[in-house]
Image (cartoon, rainbow, N blue to C red; front, side, top):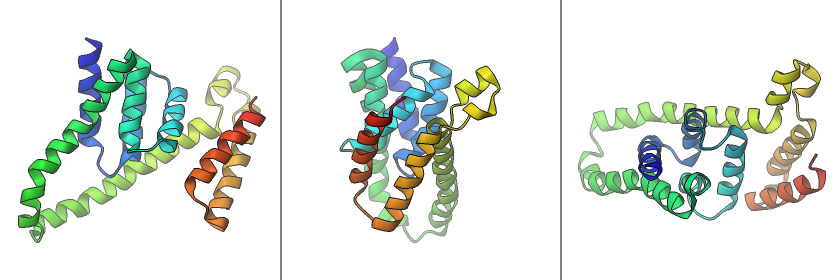
Length: 187
């Protein structure tokens, strides 16, 4: 039964993840809350591993979540569920898209999708920032504003952001550097 549920949930995510893998993050966050298969904190690990692994982030996250939930077969089933909608849509739409490319309704539809995708990616940004930079669980337990911000994470974020804007190194450099620094300053 778990395999059918994994397939169905990741099929839905694959079907509605328009605009790239980051758009899947709000859907995965909702899945974590609803299913209990993984926590919000584990979602941040999924994102980090998926971003630093070769391949599409949404597929990597499906594989990771499926494996975490139900082992190797769970990873394979979740991955299949994640990629199947896109594969079917590409096969069905690719032939018709060229024919309707100039259609004003198709163009209007694409223009309408862009802001929705921007909103999904923005929600992903806010969600990951909240999980990565704040200690919400500690704050809720203590109601002490002093524990809310993870200052080490905020400093690392600012340094990485500055480095990316100033030096323009390859993103893998910052992923590896963040991993190494994280190992040395882990609480």
